[in-house]
Figure 1: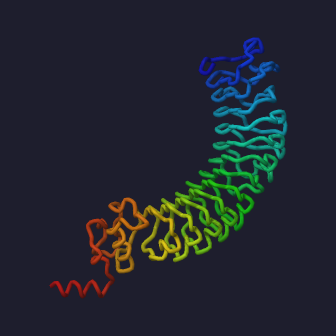
Figure 2: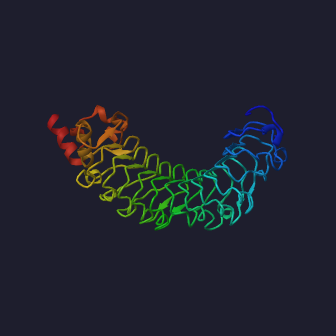
Length: 359
């Protein structure tokens, strides 16, 4: 029934379809008035409804059956979620209302969705004042929450502790306060990427996320990291901090991450790196790191890294070493690491002495 320019569906159109489970009415010309009361009655097996890409929908339909398990309402023009919008959909497990024009959600907008496992409201101009405090909390079985590109300046408060996957990418968040995720003890995936506005991660911001497996914080505006920035991430396997503004990493920046396997630091503003940052005695499972695209100062302080890259069969493997170049000193500016030897990585006077000995 998708892509048929359908403007209305009646109860008679679906009469006798006792085993009908899924109705796909996406890409049509439906409006709320095109689905009158009773349209989906007497369909005992019916559970999945897709009304996406019906651009004449400027409100959510009001006569949906209470036995729905999955409801997709994507790329329409709904602007508000009221307390009554989903009040009868108590069996709903998957709800996707992304890519509408949502500006606000009523305080009780999701209070009846206690079986909800997946909710995506991303790509809506909601902003922080459109999300009341604790609005998601009644959905205490919610595991996946999509809030991507919702123009949020802050992390919403009182998110349900059942969450396993939280997507906050492409928002306008400016900072992560201490303990902001502390109740999300089951969270496994956290996406914060592509937020130049995110310039500060407070110490202990990730405290409580002991089960987190993957952290995406690439393309953000954070320029400094402390030894306590990543406190709490004892179980994390993959961290992406690429394409950022980080200028320095202290020796113990990642030492809390005993299970870390993959670390992306490419295209930041790092000029040097202490060997202890990637020490496998504190990071025993670290197997891969990306460091290319940084403005490296290729002197004696980075000789250890050049030697490690040249002997790249020891953990952690440095991926794409042929993309690593020197920004300083002047004599090595623009030179690719794979065209140099460890003897080129010297400091000031030592370089002059080497030149004099070879003259």
